[in-house]
Length: 440
Image (cartoon, rainbow, N blue to C red; front, side, top):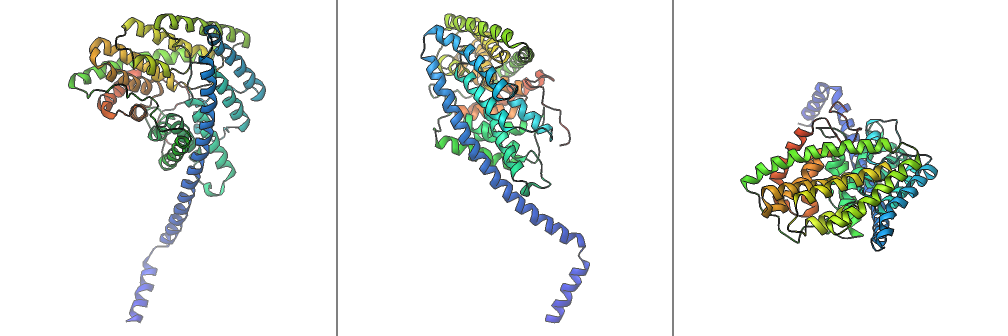
């Protein structure tokens, strides 16, 4: 019997192709590399979570200080922030641009493009003074850029596990962790980092490290702060949708897409203006921001042009039960122009939250026309549609609103609104560095 078994094993070895041994060795290498990638993605997430928490702390404390000042001091603070930002970028950054999210997309698509530590320090410092002084941009751009730079630096310094691997592995992981941390939304972080590089497609082969980094970045961040949803709407209930709301969602989606197209064009103009001579753009931007501060204060009773725009949602749209359509339109224009002026002046920040605020205003306006009693639902539909259209990230937009509000019962009409917005948006996007789907 043992002789028969030995001959059987020899026969099997002779019949088995040589490629089987090669494939088995490749599988072992792949398994070992996967474990190493997951570990390094987790480390990237932790490092990013710590960095983003420190960044948020500085911005929030500086911004709270600005909000406590008298009106003229608060109105001129964003202009001073733009001056400080310009000096930091020129001298500390060696002439670095104010781009953040675009830097991630550029590095994603160009293997030869490197995210440098010197530029990271300059841009994050510039974003602290821009956003902390009341500039009308968001913290997610610097967070995404910071996380992607941390991931890229880790991958460059630890090449052994990544021989033959994609150069973007930890770049994407760090970006996902940055978004997950600043929004306290791990699923949104992973989806956004995978969805934003392309129009109408997702980045491939990056899901596992993005998920791991998002989770570790989120856990690190909330362990140092709290787990309260970013856009908590506990002051009211979001009603369950009805069939008529599906028609309303289509209207919200189409309107938000038109608004997002206009906002994207405005931001492109602002980026072009930011290349002009420093005195010219600073004077124009500073004057515009001061005027918008007092105009919004006069119209809404509070300076809604100041800061990223969270106050527009928390202290106005979520609170005021009766708002006229013309007033919503006026604040929408003010917020868009304030973001553009901050960008034109060379301020460093993201446009994710400005898109969120714009969508909330548009959705609330449609709700006041269609069904004022359900304005809360339409506000959230507008956020999902406007954000999805502007960045061409419908999945991330819907997930963002679900995670940051803690109200998932709007998801079905929000998906419909996001799809309609995506169709109406056409080829437009808030960033020029997105690409069409194609081979990686």
